[in-house]
Image: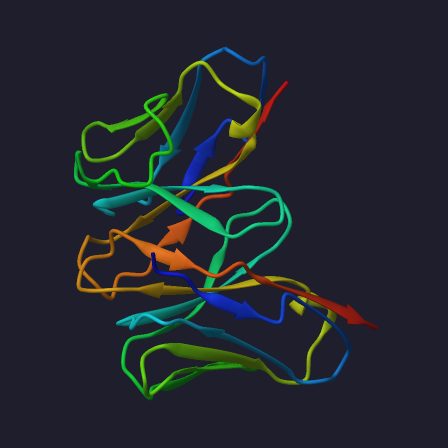
Length: 115
Length: 112
């Protein structure tokens, strides 16, 4: 499709396991963003990529969280040793570039539940 | 840090009524964005505002970028059932799109 694609759409895992979430941005979009949305809350910025590099990692909540992007396209967000407070919807967005006036387009998110 | 205060938190109105919601901040933003989110989906961009004082319409939706650059409002005229959802404002500082601050959302419910 033409939009941002995220997988899996739902993930249930046990506390302490590692999880990997995937984002396929819109073709040609060089900027990619990860957000976390807890139930009934707004969006919390996690990390941003311009190409394959991450100029702004300020939103990652702890060292259990990491993200990478390869080939200027697909990105993965990895959470190690998951905790129950990691349960949330993880949203990915992409935009044409890292400069201003480039609105972000969102995927439908991965709903992560930690038991 | 920068925060956006979005109000009201929720609205329950009659179909056909007009709706108004707003966001305010103590910080100046260079871009204001309004998104709508339906259950189980990601936010969808409704309107983007790039200039202080700018007033932009998208069908029944109208949004304005406040003169002080610290606030924005969104109006929906003649609401219909498909307007139900959560509306988010978002503000962007500077020339980089690296960080966009989101409001906490306005949940809109409509009585048919």
